Length: 393
Image 1 (cartoon, rainbow, N blue to C red):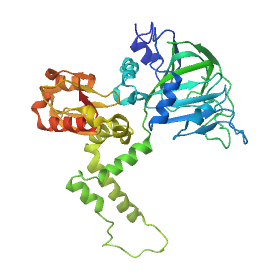
Image 2 (cartoon, rainbow, N blue to C red; image 1 turned 180 degrees about the vertical axis):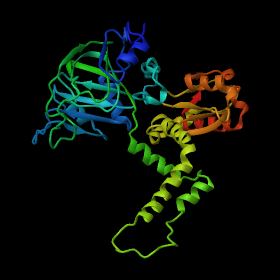
Image 3 (cartoon, rainbow, N blue to C red; image 1 turned 30 degrees about the horizontal axis):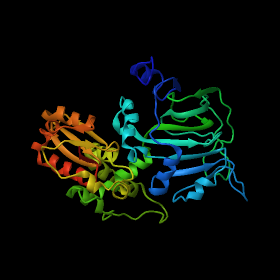
Image 4 (tube, rainbow, N blue to C red; image 1 turned 90 degrees about the horizontal axis):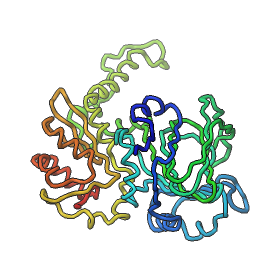
């Protein structure tokens, strides 16, 4: 059974994706929780998992609404919570429960680079994170209990936020759609659609979020990449090139920034950008496959022990959070392969093996054999193994 119910993938992308919400009843039939609330709290106490506790009514003596607590947590942070109106959220859940990668797998009709992470929200009765807007697509899967969802479909909704709040809570929220989701039900929400989810009794909800890089973040990361150690000689020359006005002429006012100077300064920037234009796909491939929160790996997973020794005859397993993608280069009859921010160039003749490496999470020795013929791939593979991005099966 498709997670989209009676709707085909093509219909969903055409009619709903980034356009309007969709409820699918029984999208995940016979859903079973892999942990309970106590185990989830234990995870936050024992690791540096990205987590937070949100209290709608706040705590005494201030009783300020929508109070947020961040790690490190203590036992008291959980034992002192009220009976109602609070929520506990954990991001990057697939890092700690790799088997939950199975929840992400059905959504791979959207390209892998777009999938961000899996989050879980435990809520006491009437718990929520308030009416708000997300800048990305999200699928909300009801894992346990019931949650009532309300959304505003009017694109001209009031955008004013509650003042002096730690959270971006909408001050005015008047919903025009409402659903009660039970275990296994799923709600898709497009970006920038106001919504509110309130627990009907205790409940847990999973969310599969999709990354949507913003222009400023992309541009800043791209500019930073110009000066890294792998930049070519031409790039380094352009980076260090300075403004030159050897032919300067006397101007009428010393306060004016002359058009000729503006042009020269602009040329400094544009020459560097034009030089890097052909390298932009390579930057994007690295950027979009970089591992999130890589600093957590060694501490949380003892990956050096898990990884195992490299052997071309071994079977391997890829961690669910490891992003692997490729870009076709028709001009040079090659394929750029990216994995966890690493990059190698391989011939187009290996397209089938590259696609298998990108699409699968389990690799038999025969699957990778064609790629191990290339030293650059083998070197990248060893780096992934060392980092714990994959391990022997």
